[in-house]
Length: 579
DNA sequence: GCCGTTTTCGGCCCGACTGTTTTCAGTCG
Image 1 (cartoon, protein in one colour):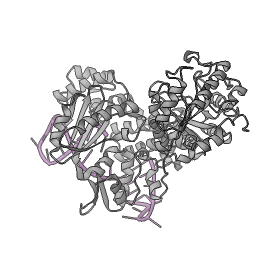
Image 2 (tube, helix red, strand yellow):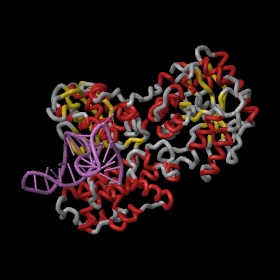
Image 3 (cartoon, chains in turn orange, red):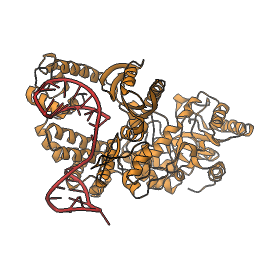
Image 4 (tube, helix red, strand yellow):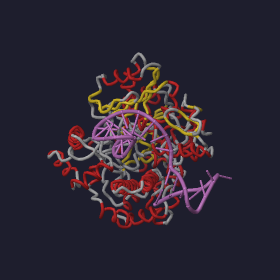
């Protein structure tokens, strides 16, 4: 059980409370606690065992008891009581767009519908249209929604969302009356997956004109709602996209508003209220006189509250507002800080480019150094290297390094951590390399204790410099494996082993929450592309974004070291270093 | 249900759009 599982439990309680028409504030309390748990950098299970749950902001005695109970027996008093009253199968019905808690409650109470299938039948029979608050029109929409949910693809991966949003942004920028366009929402916060796209445009003219052009764009499939300043469409690719248009004088406050997150806004607006101010997309205004005080640029919005600009990646309601108030926002690592890329593959294993091609491409990108880290023999499907082939490959790498100017090319390997925790290549061979990444590619189904011991063995081997994609998740495909993350961090710190922030779009592993815990514990990180081609090198900003979402500064990132310092630490030295 | 350099009780973020209404509740972000 991880923090995410607990957060889901609290979210479900909140939703059931809403359907049962409980106090909106009680609902909000559960939602807030769920968000706090989701973003909590330590293990909430451990906090429950240590009876420290109420130290989590937003968790009081009552919710703490629910969490403890959930940890112990996969359910809680509150849930059990609610489930007696409200069928939990209604949670799936609530997922349908256009149906909120009030309407779900009405359908349930008046028609006896308890799940999506029941609703589908009720819609077929025209029972919903006959209800107060519904009509034949809304019933038709509901029908379409149910069909859509059946073939629903989940959330969209960040890289894809960014690509789609960027092309829409360009299309909007080409319109005559448009002044500025920005991608906002969770895409701007670099959230790992994105639900809907949010775009903001400003105009000197009639917002309505921009809306008219927007819905005519090639990418737009269906118009879901269309007002003078806000339009929602479904794109042909299935994603929903909101466009908001405001006067350019509100650019900053509008951008801030549509970037979110909801929890960041709640904290900020509470702070504003304390100070006699009010924040909306139309600026920071005096709560009494409504006098406009700030909103031209985002930085002005924060300044009006006496705060420095909080970077979008931190706007999750995970303590960034209080940190800003205390003047303790971290100076986040940036893409420019990254001096080299230490995890990439070539044609020697499963990559598509040669050592030299990768080196040249990285030099173009401005890297000072790289490390070639092809797979080891256990990954047969990737043409993994035997010890003999690895030694010969290392010679090839050194030849390229000697021949090329303007970039250092280090020898390395992505060695497999076998089920028993031993490495797939003998230690003396690994010790002859500059930088060794150790990863797990098979045998994911182990107990947390076994997996922890497996990783600890690799960390303690004395020949490993980094653990690759440490949690092993693949977005939308495979959950992270169970392990004692804190134990891994302690060992990594003790043995001077970095944890990778793998920038591959389907991995993004570590994510923000785990990056944050890692640096809190003092562990070092390495942000890597894991590129299998020249194009694959382009994903590095996504890894940087995860680090930024984890409050990481340059000082914690080993590949932010300038070449000379990096050499002093790693160049051929691992064999001599004592663990 | 949570929380407190205004409060241990009385508050709890703000606005757009839709649809069914007859002045606004519900949903969404």
